[in-house]
Image (cartoon, rainbow, N blue to C red; front, top):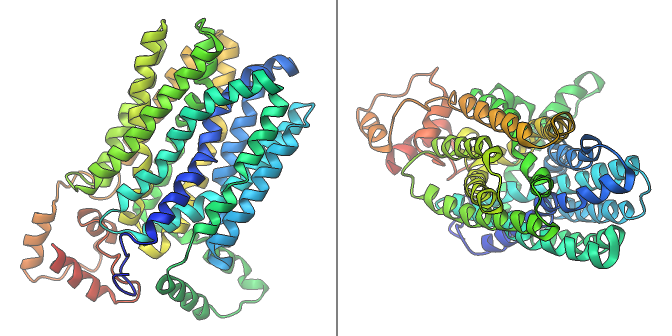
Amino acid sequence: MAGPHVPPDGGWGWMIVLSGFMMNALSYGVIRSVGVFFVEFVHLFNRSSSEVSWISSIAIAVQQFASPVGSALSMLFGARAVVMAGGVLAFLGILLASFGNSLLHLYLTLGAMTGFGWALAFAPTMGTIPKYFLRRRALALGLALTGNGVSSFLFSPLFQALIDAYSWRGALIILSAVVLNLCICGALLRPIPALENASRHLKELQQPSKCALFLRKLASVFDLSLFRNRGFLVYSVGMLLIGTGYFVPYVHLVPHGKDLGLSNYEAAFLMSVTALADAASRLFSGCFADLKLLTSAHLLVLWNSTTGLSLLLLPLAETFPSVMALGLIYGLSAGAFAPLIFAVLPDLVAIERVTSAVGLGLMVMSLGGLLGPPLSGLLRDLTGDFRVSFLVCGGFILAGSCVLMCIPSFFSGATSSCRKKKDRTGLPPAKDEPPVSCVLITPSSTDHSLDVSQSTRLSTMSEEC
C-alpha cells in the first residue's frame, strides 16, 4: 500500500471492485429484470398493474430505506459480516417467494425480506470502494456498477427461459441460489487498518450514555448530522425526486413493450440491450469523470437531465426499432449517471463519512422509489398504457436535476487553476466559508489523511493545486 492513510489506488482494491460488481449484479441487476415476472403475476393473481408493481416497489424502497442500517452495522461489526448476512436474507426471501399464493406473501418475501438483505449488502460494499481509491475512484465505482447492466442483459432473457421451462416458481428457486453468491461478495471485503483505527478512535471518544442521551447516540451511529451539511441536504432532495422516476423503466419497460405488441422475447431483448448500453456507459462515465474536465456535480446533472429527456420521448416510439433506439439512449444516460451518484459524495462529505452518506442518500432515494412504480402502474390502469407514466417519471427526473444545480459552488465556474491563484495570495480562507465549496473545486483533496488538522488539509490542497 502507498501509506497508512493514503488510498492504495489498486492492489486488493480491485478485488473490492469485483465484489461491488457481483453485488450490483445480484441486487439491482435482479430488480431490473424482475419485470419479466410482472405479466405472470398479473395473470396469476388477477390483480391490477399498480398492485403487482408494489412487489418491485417494496423491494427497491426497503433496499434503499434500510441502507443506513447496513452502514451502521458495518461500522459496528465490519462490512464483511454484514454483507454475508444480507446475502443469506436475500436468498431466503426469494426462496420463500417461490411458495407464494398471494400478493401479500410476495410483498413480504420478494419485496421486504429480499430488499432488506440487499440493503445490508449494498451500502457497506459501495462505501468501501472509495476508501481504496483516490485518483481512480470514479473508474472503480463505474466498474463496480457495470454489474447492473451486464447482469440485466443476461438475466432478462434467462428469466424468461426459466419461466418457460420451470414456471415462475421454479425460476425463483434457481434465482435464490444465484443470489446466495452475495456471501462471496462479503468474503472479498477487507478493511483498511488505518480507517478501522480511526473509526475505533471516534467510538472511544463517545462516552457511554444513559437513557436521556439514547437518541443522540442513535443519531451518531447513523450519522444524521450529515443533513446539516448544505451540499448533502441539496443532494438528498434531488435524489428524492430522481428516485421517483429512475426505477420505473426497469419495472415497466418490458410490460410497455408487450403493450405495443412485441413478443415476450422481443420485450425481454429490449431490456437486455438497454442494460448492455447501461453497463458500457457506466465504465465510460467513470473514465471520463477521472479526467476532471468537469466536476462530478456537473456531470451528475448532465447525465441525469439526458435520462429525463429520453423518458419524455419514449411515449413517441411505436415500433420495435424506435423503442429500441430510445431504450439505448435511456440506457446510455442512466448508466453514465449511476457512478456519479456515489462519486460526488466524497466531494460533499469527508471520506470517513462516505459509508454513512451512501446509506442515508439511498434511504432518501427509496422514498421516491417506493412511490414511482405504483404511481406508474396506477397511471397505466387509468390510461390503458404506460405513455403518461413515462412522461410523469421524466418530469420527476428533470426536477431533480434542477434541485442538484443548487449544490454549493455549482455555478461558481471556479477551476483548479483559479483555486491555485487564490492559494498563492497567502490569504487564509474566511472562517465562515462553506467547506463543501472547497471540496467541489478540488475533488477528494481531503482524502489523504483522516487525522490531520483543518489547517494541514488546506495546506495539502494548496500544494496539490
